[in-house]
Image (cartoon, rainbow over all chains, first blue to last red):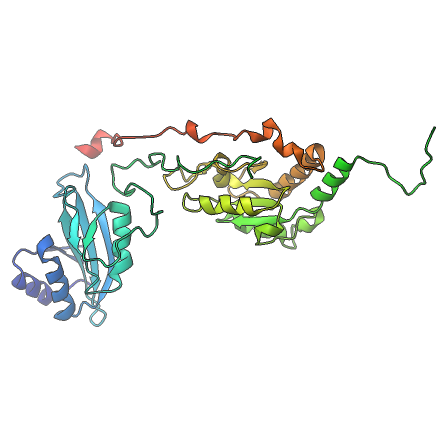
Length: 166
Length: 189
């Protein structure tokens, strides 16, 4: 269920920089990076959005009308009224840093680590920001659109076992 | 002077005797990571009955196995584990690469999937298919038994032969792709 008008009015009243829109029954809001934590806290504490469903990211490289390189997506849900809202934060390639949501939701820990692993977005204030799926020694962020699908030969330093060795 | 043997004595070479013993009691190590593993289980189960070929005792400890069956795709994070398990297995040992993914990477032509385990460990037998039917795996085991009987020696010196040393496709042959991908103009406008 989309967020109610009350929620959107409250959101816009608190922070004039927030743009809200609706698309096919889903409510979206574009939030400036500086006020992200403030918006998340407002939605959680005043509007009852108590569940952080997902944190993910979109790479807008070569995308028409793209505002910036990356768009971080926060999906929130209100488990009492079933309202849902999508927050979007745009960050650039040169400075891909956003404040972490772990102080608000402990569950954001692994979600943010995955976004860091795949896109290289740095979450400021994250307690343990390291790779979660790929090996620690991996050097690239493979879900970025400028990363080749077949990789850049990351397996080149693995040992090749021959029959006599073992 | 002719030696007269009683009827219940068979003469053979020691190498052939050792190979005959080994080929009829292969102990597979199931390295099953994907859907090929289901077919591997079906092969070992009652309907297809791998016991008919003396290879039904699946052991999950590499120390007790001599046939590694890699069934499924191997990702680059899993590869060091695969190599370690292979090294922990005792000689003489053999390896079957089961299915398209283990042999070539299959449809997973991506950065994270190893494009054929034979780039990193020696493989004796390849099974095509996605996934192969149990009959195909049984055929591979029969072929491997033939190979063991044909080439096997008591001391395992056939593993030291130069022909066994070559890795099928050395890693240096993999082209290292660099730079941004070229997008169709419709996407970039």
